[in-house]
Image 1 (cartoon, one colour):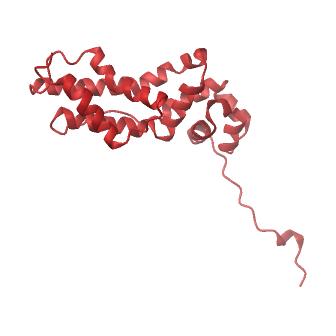
Image 2 (cartoon, one colour):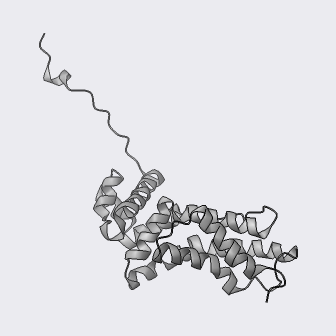
Image 3 (spheres, rainbow, N blue to C red):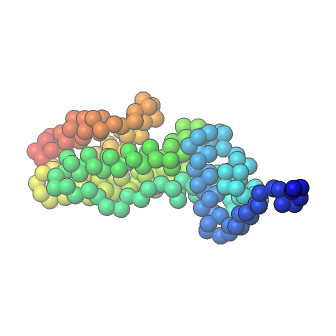
Length: 207
């Protein structure tokens, strides 16, 4: 039996054409994937388009520059911090909050964010300050204040503890050690920081 060349090849199923929010989400996901694998310096608009299985023109229509695309990808990808842990005491609440921050830092968007922080020069880095602080630092500080205020109300924490220096301590320490010391913040590291730094700093009656 002779098989016609028109019937020998397997049938090809056309991929549905994506538009709107579905296509934008695919492009943003591809940008995060590129950032977390090849970093800021290796990311290209062409590579993002290929990862999203779309044309380069579709990317440029929505984001005229690499900086614009990356800022939106980071903003949309970072986890939200909405509720402060409430486990009954300040120490356990701080440990749980630090676990959540660690998960955000080592998520795919977190890796992407750190590649931007590490690789961008100063003018480029300024473009992402709002994302860095609005997406990670400010929510952490807001929840820290809520935890500390609860501790003050219970008499567990000194009344003047909710000040800017104390509130900066955890995000500053976690960002610094992650960037400068390549710390991955395993469970013992988090508990040690809380027990040796934060609990003594916050304890009611301390100087």
